[in-house]
Amino acid sequence: MINIGALNEGIVLDHIQAGKSFNIYYHLSLDKLDCQVAIIKNAKSKKMGKKDIIKIEGDVLDIIDLKVLGYIDHNITINIIKDSKIVKKLSLKLPQEIKNIIHCKNPRCITSIEQELPHIFYLSDPEKEIYRCLYCEEKHS
Image 1 (tube, rainbow, N blue to C red):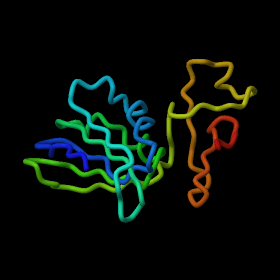
Image 2: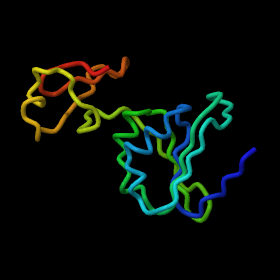
Image 3: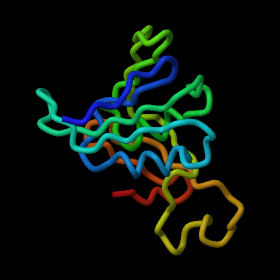
Image 4: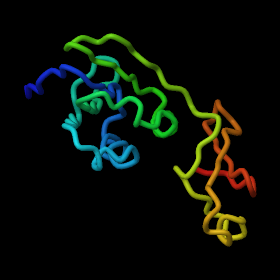
């Protein structure tokens, strides 16, 4: 068993679907942060079988986009660590609207012509987790 040291202060992204940690790492731009980041892949989990975990050192909750996390996997748990103890747990939900996380693939969409327009999608069906382009209604799959 590998032992990754405890955090004194920071956040732990837990219950990440196995194999999705690097996707989250790049979508949250964690590679650009000047702090320690530990990625644990395929950790054993009673609830999930296997899971990924990301540990981020420091007071970084303000710079993490929770909408991105919620879109990628709303089952992730965020543990806030202070003095080596979990002081708060946050749960995610699917965001109602996401901006510049995904891009419209419809060649007739205004975002294909107007390059500077933000790519905005709204949650059209929460049960099926379907997002649609705000401009052309194209479904993102």
